[in-house]
Amino acid sequence: MQEGRLTSVGHGHPLRASIFLNHNRCICIYCDMKNAATIPLPCLCASFRRASRALTQHYDAALRPLGLRGTQFTLLQALSLAGEVSQGTLGEILAIDSTTLTRTLAIMVRRGWIVNRFGDDHRERWLSLSAAGKAEFKRARPHWEKVQRALRAQLGDKRWNELFKLANEVTATVTS
Image (cartoon, rainbow, N blue to C red; front, side, top):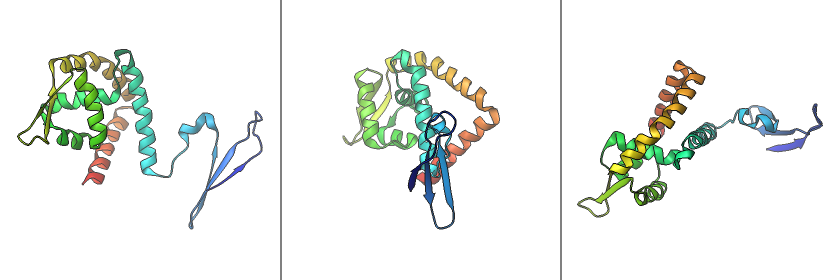
């Protein structure tokens, strides 16, 4: 990648040009930092990760008054839907690596939201929501639903449903 400074445009702020070279074509992206989130990224992974981070921050902001993070809400929701599951199965359902899942679960166990018991094989942990976890999920759900409704309204029903389908297809493709 080559970078160069360009002359200022309009307000005297220099723009930075990034040139991505490959053998077939040259792409030049001019970055205006106030619109940085709209710059198309040429990598599917980078684009999904950026969208995921932006969504996570959006949901975190809605759940922050409750002292809850989006990642914690996701685990409460998944356990509410799945019932008692092994930690390995929960990790597969959410496509979360074991270390990240263990760290988040530890916080939630300390808060009394999750019951965990060992299986017949002591390496296996079974997880379910405690009464406090069910109450926390119920308390947080209206905040989550408000974000869901707002995003759905902004995107429209068709695009909303297409995004769910696409996200599930991408997950299935890369995890199979």
